[in-house]
Image 1 (cartoon, rainbow, N blue to C red):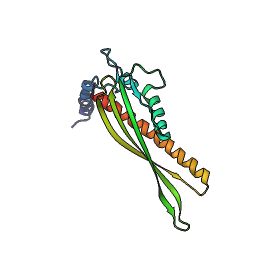
Image 2 (cartoon, helix red, strand yellow; image 1 turned 120 degrees about the vertical axis):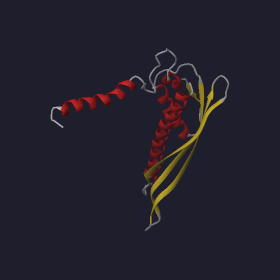
Image 3 (tube, rainbow, N blue to C red; image 1 turned 90 degrees about the vertical axis):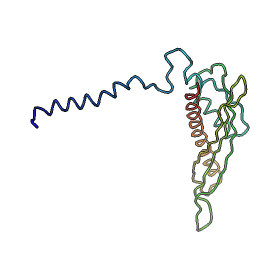
Image 4 (cartoon, helix red, strand yellow; image 1 turned 30 degrees about the vertical axis):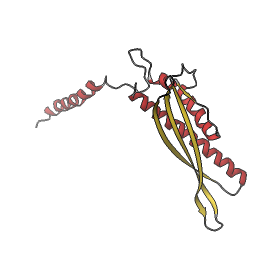
Length: 176
């Protein structure tokens, strides 16, 4: 093959590689983008989810963070869906010091059962159960250990709120 054929061949291969890109370039639309037909987008449908009050501290943390994640801190449109959260927390020792039998690393598990319902009909649309774990160093100081546990619970609640929002967005994207 001569050296003059190589630039032509490279251009042909490059053009062949760009053809699928150009053909599929208009097919991609971000999940949270507003549709072109003027219908409510996924962002508006997420903001229209009203979260029912919860009883415990961890549930309130999840509710507050999820509420902000759904609306982005903006005003919520009229309620289209209601979301019920039921939380539970389990704390266990993950690593124990063998010399004095005291826990060094503890583990907090936050579990949330959530149910998405249609606000008008109260029909259950989506139901799921999720959990997340967060470890923390408990140490020997009592109040420091309590604060570390609370911080771990708050962190786990933030992770849980993000995961629930992602699950709801995925479900709502598939069920217009």
